[in-house]
Image 1 (tube, helix red, strand yellow):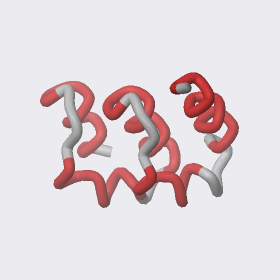
Image 2 (tube, rainbow, N blue to C red; image 1 turned 30 degrees about the horizontal axis):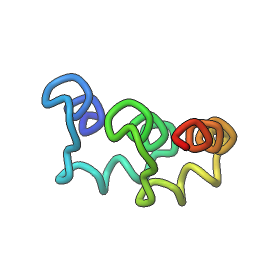
Image 3 (cartoon, one colour; image 1 turned 90 degrees about the horizontal axis):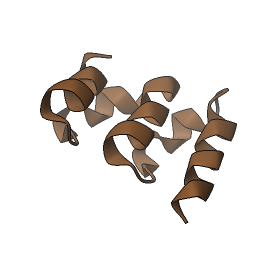
Image 4 (spheres, rainbow, N blue to C red; image 1 turned 135 degrees about the vertical axis):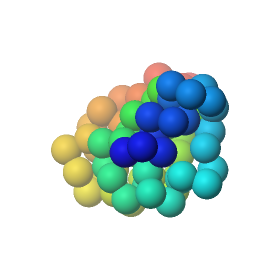
Length: 65
């Protein structure tokens, strides 16, 4: 997903204009939360929690506390 890569590698911060595209892909949503936002990302949770990434995401959230 170009939006995720742009956020992570180019601007090294949230890329709000690309978040709609990122949120449609569970894997990129998980990595966006973990690597870019470094916090819970509710917009991507619908895709994440229906995917194989749900357990990784839950562990990531536990680590935030």
